[in-house]
Image (cartoon, rainbow, N blue to C red):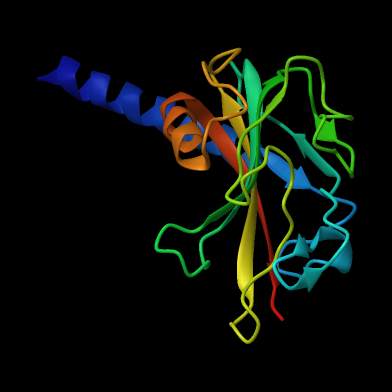
Length: 184
């Protein structure tokens, strides 16, 4: 009985240590702020919206120990689809990556070698900005950096957000999240 208590205590300490380390994992941006509205630069150009459709600059720090790669997702859980809306997915970012510049295009200019942009719900493999239905309440846009325990995910640019999400949840060591809003 005492050894099982020690094992349980050791397991609890390990969990709390990993949780504390994951809590230190942070995301920031020069272009967007947590809890604030997106600017016209991050708004889609189409579907009735007339923004610049530019991906924002993102930086992250204090990734969990053992991180072998990163992924970035931008997701709107408020989209009236029953399944949300994937605005951007990027994966297979090397562990040495700590930021992405603004304005990454469909050809991946600005991404490190080997990084892949997956298919969004707009149908392409590049950033698709905010464009909620007119008159809807402001939507939340979750910009998430995922620290992963694998160097590469076995996916390509045709991977949907849901497929990527399955692999991210299976490989995640931690997440850093920034949530911005937008309504029209």
